[in-house]
Image 1 (cartoon, helix red, strand yellow):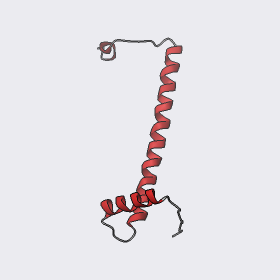
Image 2 (image 1 turned 180 degrees about the vertical axis):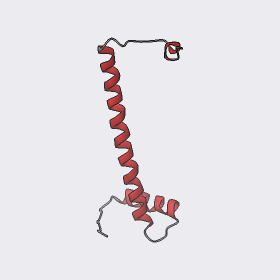
Image 3 (image 1 turned 60 degrees about the vertical axis):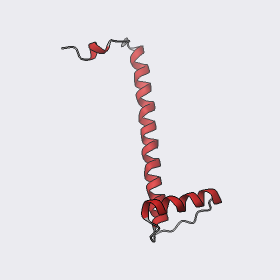
Length: 78
């Protein structure tokens, strides 16, 4: 397994250790697991933010194509 050496400010080092202990009970490898979980969450957030921006762009483009405001009941028309 590749190893990475990180240099963190003391504030973040304490925070990482505290969170790892809360999440994984301070067992061996708990800091690595906390970092891995953090990376997964960050990746999901980046993907979600990108999708949100694309959705906003689609909504803006829809206005340009004549799709304007509508009433809520129009969305559920039979």
